[in-house]
Length: 293
Image 1 (tube, one colour):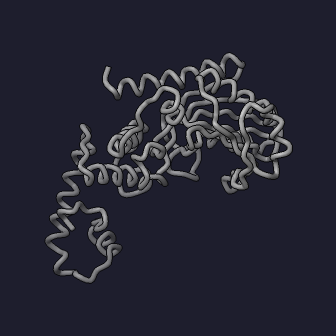
Image 2: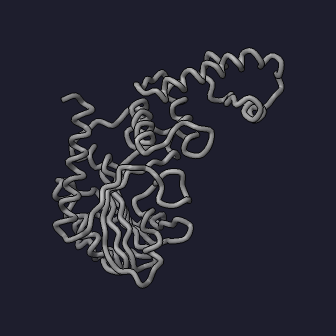
Image 3: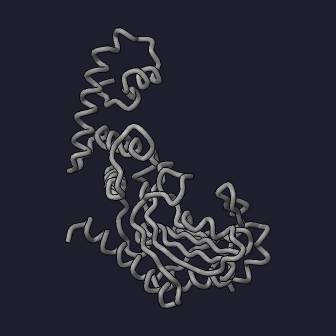
């Protein structure tokens, strides 16, 4: 078994352990491997709670569910390869709507992390909830006040408590609206800490994100998800990466044609802006490989 297969195997076992743990508690569990969004607020699913947002705001709904949700966030594109920032990742989620308390959520996660052999180095709590929530940990973990421990998606907000190991945030518990629970822990970060799995380098991170987007049913294009996929294919080519897929081969050919076109025309239009080049000729000047600059 090669290193890639080992990484998938250990991460897969961790997700399976979480599934089994949830089911043992009588909590419904779903595994979602597509990054297609559950609403139109994002191009890709960015959090496990996305599909449940209507339930947080529905006072008549009560219940608790859990999932592992494939997510994609492009905000960390320039930070990938440092071992802590990813594009694609799997979020282990727990969501309770007017049923589970903050204390019960804390117990749930400390118990599950304990089964993995992991004890947080410390947790953080917003100062406004320090007096109320500190006793819920019952002295099991050091607590640090943090005024940044508040979460909002623009509509729903709540105080939160965050879990840290080796200086890295591994997950948090949010208390939306004061009566719900929204928990998210990154499976890849847990896998790195628990199983010692080596972090992906930048090339592997790009390949993983591209593969997941394609597997979710998207094709390269000029808009929305298709544009993001094309951008990642272009970035992979620009940094010297390879991918055995027709979409990559087609994008390399496309980039070569655009470079040739730019070289042929740039001396005729020396003062044109990058926006003009893109709008008029479909050439993203800033993304051209060095040979075409």
